[in-house]
Each structure stands twice: as structure tokens, then as C-alpha cells.
Length: 387
Image (cartoon, rainbow, N blue to C red; front, side, top):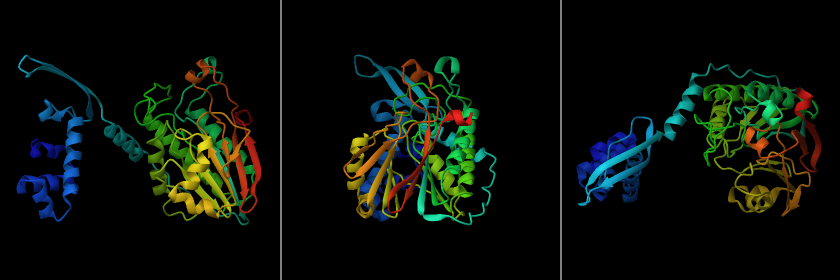
């Protein structure tokens, strides 16, 4: 494969490796000249070749027609003659995922930023208490029609429900030393430009455009943090990975980390892992959306996972929170040293759930924990209280 043509698909560092290979004549000699390990240069070249192949350029396999900018090769059909030569070839292209990711970033950059206001710290708070405010499976960006699903849902309704519920949960909770805003996965209905599920490709009903969803999501989270800062001494924000927002939860974490980088009263959990945890005194709180592990499997995971093993050892009680199935599990699974609770959702059903006959109680919980004694107080809100 021509290293010169590969340059189009290389990062600046990868291009340096390709040029060294071209100059030195081999990967081994190039690595020696650059003072790096042979495998580093080899892997870099392989990565560039893979990216080129996804764009339709791999001449040794009969691919010599790169895709258009922003697209990747979905599949190739080739017709050979009796001598094994290519007679006709069809390239089926689709939008490149990286291009979609960049489009989401551009939507963020194009958003008219309103600086997060400085909120005065409450004069009296109880450092022994931690209040967890959970919104799970909120599906911001979803569209539902009452005549079909039983309830209307769009971004305007979702914004009103989210902030109304959070305010009611705050009002009913004590002035704790820490408030945790737990967006327990699937806060966004879909990832990037396509209104489909990331993993299975199922079509979704969406309200408006991706850029608007990005803008509304950021505004809702910032407004929620502002409400919480008025009531709690400090605020921690969790944006848990869900099956609908694998990438969305990631860019939200990164955006919030930048927005609140100079606010010492706000902490953004930037864990690059679909399992999250927080230690409050002798109380461990664990979080997972529920799309990768069942509730019964989670105590073993958190107790054995190296990054949380020390935290588990320090804890007297462990409470693990999940979502994913849009309904509550009142009989909390207590076993393996932890209480596992699945939270309900405030969002309405979409057409898929309604047509499938899935019914769930819509609600959200704020749970306050004492650092020694565990659950201290619980506040429950429903959409009917807000709308």
C-alpha cells in the first residue's frame, strides 16, 4: 500500500511514522530511527490502514475508490471475470460516525454560552448528609403523542418536568453537605445525528433536531445545578452512560467539566467506565444504567472491581442504583453486601413501548443518606404534581 496515499488518513504523529517508514525502508528501521518500539510504529501503520479501508482504500484487496468526505464504506460488492480480475464493483457508503461526532461538537461550539452564575453557598448545611437526586431514562429529545402513547412528550415538556421535579425534590430534602445530581443513563433519547439506538439501530421518534437537543440538554443540566447549589453546600454531577446515549453522556460530561472547571462547589464525575461510585462516610453509593449487568450481578462487580475495591472495604452499607427498564423495583435486591434499587422514570412512553403494552409508574426519587446510618429520608415526585 502506498504510504503517500495513506497520509490522507493519518494523524500528525501517524504521518511522522509513515514518512519514517518511507525514508528508512522498513518498520523496524523506522522505529530505530525514531527511538520508539517496533510495535508502536507497526500499530500506528495498521490503524491508518484500517481507517483507509473503512473509507474504501485498500488496493491489495481490490479497493481503490475512496468514499466521499464524511462517509465510510458500509459494504462492497465485487464482480470478477473468469481470470479473477475485477469486472464491476459497487461501493455502498454511509455517514461516517466520526463526522457525526464532529457535528455534535460543532453544535456545542455554536451554542450561545451563558456563563454559569455564581451561587451563594447556603449558610447552614449538614455535612453528615448526602442527598441523591435521580433522573433515569429521561429520554430528552423523544417525541410522544398522547393519542398513541397515553401522554405527550417533547423537549418543552421534558424541560418543565425535569426542573419542576428537581425543585420539588430539593424542597423536600434537608440542606445536605452534598447533593448528587444523578442522570442515571439515557438522559438523551438518541446519539448524534441519527434518531436510532446506538447499539441496535432501532428507529426512534424524535422531537426537533440534534443541535436543539444539545442546547436544551446543557441548559437543563446547568439550571438543575443552579437550583441545587442554592440548597446544598456542594454538588456532584453524574452523567451515567446509557444504551441510548453512549456518546451523548460522554460529551455532556466533557462539556460540564469545562463549564464548571473554576467552580469549587461543583464536581463533575468524569469516569470513563459504565460503573460509577461515591463514598459518603461509611456509605458507598454505586451507579450503573443496567444495560450491561443485571441487578443481581452488581454487588459482585463493585466489590471485585479494582478501582472500587478499597471503597467497598471502607463502607458499612452499599446502595447500588440502576434504571434501564423504566419501572421501579420496590422489593430491593439485598444480597452480596449491597442493596440494589431500580429507579422509575418521569418520561412518558414512546410509541414502541405503548404498542408493546409496556406500562410503568412514572416517578423520581430524592434519597438522603447519613454518613453512618444509611438511608435517612426519601422524597418521591410524579409528573402529575408538576404538569
